[in-house]
Image (tube, rainbow, N blue to C red; front, side):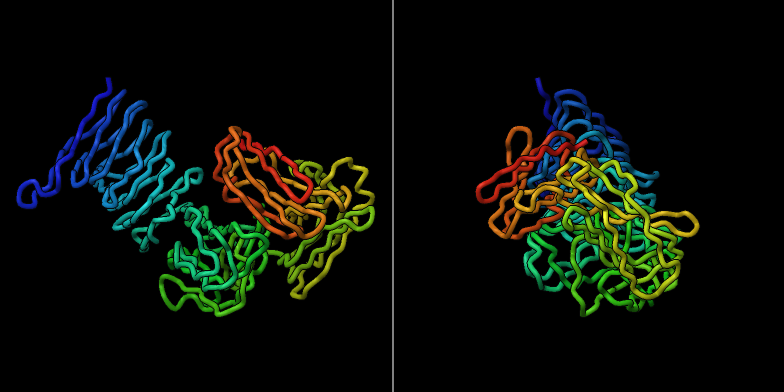
Amino acid sequence: MKKYYYLLFPVGLMAGWPATAVQAQMTLSGAVTFYIGPGGLATVPAYLTVGPGATLTNEGQLDLGGDLTNNGTLTVPTAPASLLRAVGAAGLQNLTGSAALPVQNLTVNNAAGVAINANVSVAGTLTLTNGLVTVAAGTPLVLLPTAADPLETAAARLVGPVSMAARPVNAAAFGPFLGLALPAGANVANLTLTRVTGPTGITAAVGNTSAAVYWEVATSAGGAPARVMNFGWLGVLDNGRNMAQATPWRSVAPYTTWVRAAGPTANAAVADPRQYAPAAPAEAVTGRFTFTDLTAPLPVELTAFAARRQNLDARLDWTTASEKNNAYFDVERSRDGRSFEAAGRVAGQGNSSSPHEYLFLDPKVAQYGVPTLYYRLRQVDANGAAAYSPVRTVAVESATALLISAWPNPSAGAGPHIRVEQPGEGPLTATLTDVAGRQLAEYRTTARLSEELFGAETGALPSGVYSLRVTTTGTSQVLKLVRE
């Protein structure tokens, strides 16, 4: 039989006295439910462990001085005032366990900090009073669509990946949220944002480094909607860069090559938090964004890279805005988007501050026996260091066919890069379903070419098998997607 422990009392039992319960440490085992009712207060100075089969329901306030480990069930709070407070005074606290930790409101007031090693989601307010909240790379802290933007300081901030769940923005102004703000403009539909700070937020490429922060942005809109993009970050994240010369950079999946973003170099060091808010120009909002200064540029500015069919061949064109110690480009080809082989080599310009255009032809691509070929550039410096470009695809099949590709597939971590090409403009619907046939996401367009479909949605999927069905006038195709 399941056992229940309750704290049901209202806040005002006697002239404003709260209903309280204090337990030095607690382990819930088996079929046990610990329920903190609205207005109730439970204080656990040491650790609280929710074991398999046990349930913790917090509709009131839970003050913790030690670790919270959830290997059972922590129910999603329904009370708007539900609060979990990490208030330890004896060292680092951990929010961990094999099961999710959904909270309504979370307060951190622990000078030694809090480490998150579980799937924690916040629906209301995240209050950072004292201490660093370090988030493990594999378990990003998720701020749900109803969550407020957390206020951070140098002494009380988030370190690691923090994600904003998809929010409808459309053409309206957005933010600031996690340091990103978008003035009103092009329709971006639903916006998804992940900000990574600290050591894992530093972009390092061939000896050059960025500020200790980057933002990864995705939309559910078709095409590549562009907006003016404003950013803000704490000065403690400058990583030694001179932010009086803040210079924006952008990378697209698979995030191996950075190019200068559309925004200008500007003085962001006037205030702390830093503020980078150009009046123009607009920038494609999808991708990763970071900042350096003029003395620490990221290498080889690849401003364009395209691949297409040209008669019986595949034609690759790319352009660099500047090059630093660039020896050559290896052009690499793949039949499955995972295993690449050398297709050819093109010499670089060494050091150059002028734009250069490059061309490479891969002849008679039908010989490889696949409907789609994948290409990338491997840029190699004079000292042997290498960096990779984004992947581009070339359709080998007839131009009258509906072409669907996803790479890598199987995928892990970030979702696969999904590309759909129809012979011409017309109504197209793409749906993502699970193995039980439940629809998880839908995309509609009339565009001939759609890229980076369902990036945020597939990236959040657990391991398993999923189906991507694409339907146009007169035809329908299904592609199996595997998440590892």
